[in-house]
Image 1 (cartoon, rainbow, N blue to C red):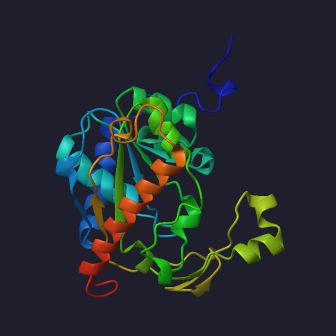
Image 2 (cartoon, one colour):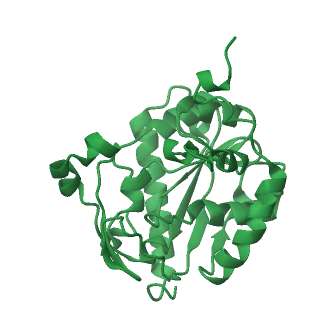
Length: 270
């Protein structure tokens, strides 16, 4: 007889605990609303049922995208509709694995995403991953998924809309200098840590950092904008071209991010 340990994905879906998530949000909300002065705009256009939220990832080692979005989403829609975030396997190692599962984090693979979307869940994905989260501050307002398009197929196969979401301010929590792809390649980091990058940044309190030691995030104002849902079948037909859909999604997101950037008066202050 098989058990949960036979399948590394087993137990991810269905472990969401509304009570624990509510308690976590109640702890996070004062920090997010005071320290980062967070805002999520556009939730009034959010569709019912399953949806794939596609966002740009920001903030290096301390990305605030999911907590900020989740806090306002749960305030608007309640805890009966879970926000499930596709996440790196590293979150599910060690004693904190169960906590992450219960608060809505699931392993990032198509099987988990499909199961969550079929259940009517709101699934959050950051196609650019760490490559995006460590983009240089000089390119903070550029949408770059590093060529990853799997999210499009996931949405098509599940028959759900894509909800683009963009955020600004996360790359101001410290000064991100470079992703360090050349350094990772020359040091063999990809082979050891399954990472294409070795990011270099400058922040508080350690100054220069190559991810270690981790600097604390500065209190930059973070604003997130939910954009209009994209019904792939209605817009691209029954046999959509993956590249065309991906290009459209990134174009819509870039336009939305440009609008946020145009309204931002000062770095960190907002």
